[in-house]
Length: 465
Image (cartoon, rainbow, N blue to C red):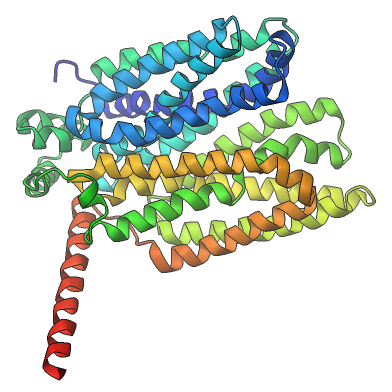
């Protein structure tokens, strides 16, 4: 490596894309209030300003994977930082609606690319014992980015051009990410696949505190898996990868349809319904952001010590139960101060449950599940599914809220929490404490077993006939 960084700096720079991810998705909540007035936007245009990032994110998430398998994680991280910079600066300087939409789509490309690329990169760098925490840093940075956005939104609201500063500020961390990506090491898995074993060994020595025995073992396992020819869409939907694909798609969808973004969106209104003032309601986003960061940190710490599946199941139960209680509280909040307080307490517990379980664990697990020869493609596809689900939930929330009302709607999200518990029980396999190579070998063993069982059934039927 031309530049040697400590493992801590490597993790920080790699996860910095998560902060941009969180900031860019959170800053628009405050900025849109001023954009609509200054650019004279109608309701349709306002919807597109908010949703343009989601459109770009879906495209970015789906397309980045195959390129990262071909050109490497680090080069694509550099490209992502450039897209972040152009999109953020362009959004802050946009003179009219169509320029703003275009730059927001570019920003979305970067957000989607980061959501696919960074969990993969962190999972491939981190030692087995630290992989949960290091991969979870991505979600911690997302929460930190959201908090930063809420704080700046609050303090810039009195400035006439404040929305331009809200959106344009992201160019600064994007520039830092670009500088960091220049000196970041390439993924050791990618290096071995491209006949750079010596460089891969240097990277692994840095990440494993110069433990030569561990590095030799990792290199041997990676070389074995790297001999397998790179795959494409056929391999992604093939028999061997199917358990990982089903688990990743389910986790990506359920993380969104359990209502996380809608509850965060509706949080200030819930505070005002509970009798708190408008000023406190505006500040509530900041307090929620701080709370999110703290609980996310606790969650990613536990991921190294506790079964990922158990954490998802416990989180699902807590989220489902608190949503049902919150619904009851919202239905009676206008008549009862106690019901309003219960709604607020339930919402806080719900947010904590999501931030400590489904928030970080989903991104960590999709970074772990797929085989090396299609890891970029698999993570990219799962991230694209997640952003598509995000877009659908975001676009359907306002009309559903109008139709069902603030209380009844969240019952539906609570039911999805219960369905998510069943899904984890039935379709999600454990990854905690396992190397990426052992997970891949388990997938191959499962496929071999299924093929043998199918052959045995065929032979039995032929004998009977």
